[in-house]
Length: 357
Length: 72
Image 1: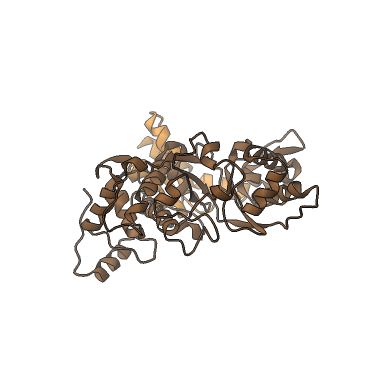
Image 2: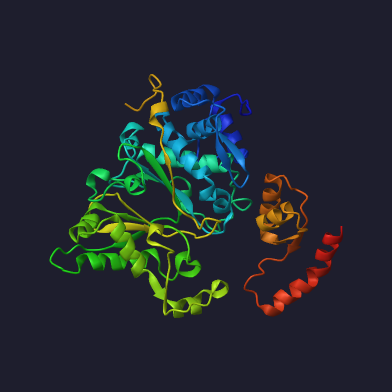
């Protein structure tokens, strides 16, 4: 059972939460017992069920504590299964959450939602402006995970979250894949799940960087040119990948760019493989710029990514000129890998009067 | 910090060398894992990249303190 605080008004309670460093700096919904109970009920899970530990504080993420964060973030009960799924992925030891929170690098878990939960859990946006602002489910789900990382994981700037600058995605960082507008199988299917499963995939990564490419269907090198500019964005010499030679990066193709690649008979796997090839960088650059991270390299080039699997490709956003790349960190015992967890919709309990519709 | 904690847990005497800027984080992590009293020695910040001569000077200035902590 979580500790109960008492204040005379909502305003006073909000100020108390700010004073206790329990917020992300923005106003939160005050997590009254009634609101938290309703969120727990929506999960269909026991309040005391421990989903795992969140570092660096190693706090136990019970369903109730996650529900507190979900209320504070402004979630609807409909969003709760995705929040629980995101927390399950975050507490997976493969995710190295404690190290991720403690690093001086700026990275935040990007929450990627696939499958029926995209529609069934409050409508997680995948199209125009999917990374925000303006989409409630995206905003609230991503923020709920962050508030868990603050209040359960203990991540606080300059004390336990040592990111030198942070980044805006550390407030919230969530989108769905635009499966209906993608020429490729859904991301979660490529990662071994069934199409009818709902899955959250987390990747700790930097803020999105725009990549412009003007599609030209008459150009026989259309796909290769697109891949070339994406490769520059995702692993230029300023990224950790070029210097540390580890980490997982995300490439968010807009549907237009995804079609350019599909018309060249490429799929997610061949796109990742080609990007991996194109992100082989000159060893001389590593030797000159890697400083204390310099290691002897025998060949003339070296791969910025350990394998094509470390390039997570998805389709989202509106159609047009711009795709997004999110380079990442490369630290932690598991080299900052992507981790997926199922969203358990069969446990979900609809709370009367509490959905968005 | 975690390297020192993991070594101490494996029975290897350990002193954690922590720069000034990371002292609060070190205390936070040590408390989180239930080892708030793990020996730590404070270094100026930064150390990395400040040149061999300065790093040698820092090493000279803390060597005795490290030995004292091992002996304590």
